[in-house]
Amino acid sequence: MMWEKTFALLSHFRGSHKSRFGICTVMLKKHRGQPIVCQDATVINQGEWVGELHLDNERILKLIRSEGSDRAALQTARMLRKSMQQINEAFESQSEFRQVKALLGITLLHRGLTHGLGFEQQNIKSGVFERITTIYLRLLLSAMHPEGRQRINRRTEQLVPMLLIHSRASLKNRFSPGQNYSG
Image (cartoon, one colour):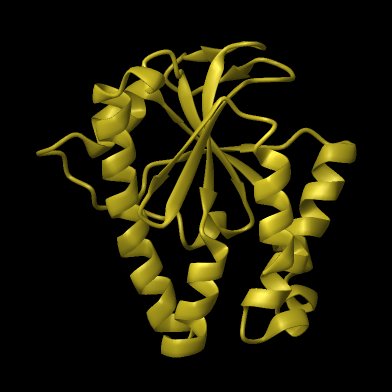
């Protein structure tokens, strides 16, 4: 997918470190913008380190084409859970992750795919970034979903990007060995 390659090239200049964990990539970068206050009272201020979470959309698209959307969604959820466990291990053991305050992602799939992963969800502040993100993610969904454009037109009001957050503490509480990963 061409836009994924373009994004990867541009993102290379935005972060200090990039690591792959199964179906996810985490790019370390300094937070820009307003402070983010998490449910557990963690505050992420401008200039503090965060891990920006990205799904491997090309891999998901291949799954959808080979397995169908329902099976692909289940497999993606399993792979995502495993990736989250690996990310937590990296946060605990790798020096480059020691200063990271939270794991952040932006997605339209906050109603389905992220269920059971314990992410806190926050609205994205309205503005240019929110509009561009909405357009990009809707285009991506229309390209990946079997129903394409019809899916977006049918549920436009629900297809709003959300900020997903796992503070360092919530990630550890959710994905440390021996923790319950369900719902």
